[in-house]
Length: 438
Ligand code: ADP
Ligand code: ASP
Ligand code: MG
Image (cartoon, rainbow, N blue to C red):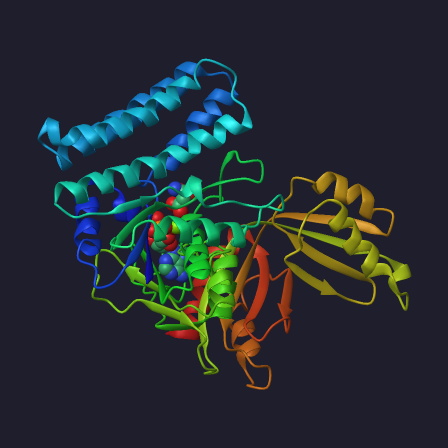
């Protein structure tokens, strides 16, 4: 069994939805198809929630109307005959009724989660109707019936596995299962989600619990490129990546993969293939337990980073200083990305600055604290065994004209990270590509 996930752009219009139906409609084996919302939908749902939180009901209604018009146009294009359209139209109508029901009272967090869930509920209903109209039988696996998180926010793999297997066993003849990405229930049973871009994570959780043969992430580009194609020209797809390399790239900003998506696949040793819906024959990228090859594979950038420096004369020859610093971050449930130490101080970087003021207040007990905001981590990823000389030299050489605030190397064999100002990000990405890949 394979798991095939199609992202927002892959189902972003009537023509794209038809194209995905062509791709999934003739399976050679049993497949589970995970769908995202049509592109732009989740952004609109976020916008609706924001309007409602601010009490701006007319703003929310306007966005709901515009979104509904877009869906109605898509349905008319997909199903010109109104009778054939009625099943999909009813499902879409139910979702818009849910959205409108939230315009009547102040929005709660639970309400927001239900609003955000409507995109995937609609795209899967539309795809099922289309397949059925083409005479192809598919079975819906409602994500809200099996996808569940623990109070830690992590997926409850045991619950998911047993419930999903039971749903599949009920349909021994089925070849095509369709399910929603992104949405889930939390430990209280309320509707929730796996965070933005989370459909990739859905696919890899399903692949892991079912021990699938392969997880395929179908998107709008032919695999993981060696740099961010939104900022750098002439990037090229990387054909093979080790799980660890892909995990570093996803965590450090390669938008093509949700940061958490690689781990379940890696733990169960299930290959992940990144494929292009618009060019299905292109080989894409294979992520697996790749053998060591001693090369630099790709570069990614993670925005919105804050660097915090704690300088203390007492750190000199003292023990326990770093423990106290780390404990402060732990107390504020804030995870640390990069660390650099010297004899008189330490600098750490975080991407979540929601507790920054409180963290800084606490850290002041241990020394002088300086904060740099608007920073970016640039991550150079590959099979970078330290005794293969020269990687760091090439990276630093490429960045010769750019101020580097921090460097981290040696935490794993897979990355070198550097911290630069946000205003230097694009220049740094381009300089690294020119030096490492041209
Ligand atoms: P989907 O809607 O299918 O989930 P995403 O927009 O989340 O697609 O991810 C695909 C996009 O990721 C690409 O269009 C590309 O602009 C962006 N991207 C960023 N970094 C990379 C990279 N290193 N390789 C490929 N794509 C990347
Ligand atoms: N629809 C969700 C989002 O836009 C999940 C996804 O596309 O993966 O974030
Ligand atoms: Mg995505």
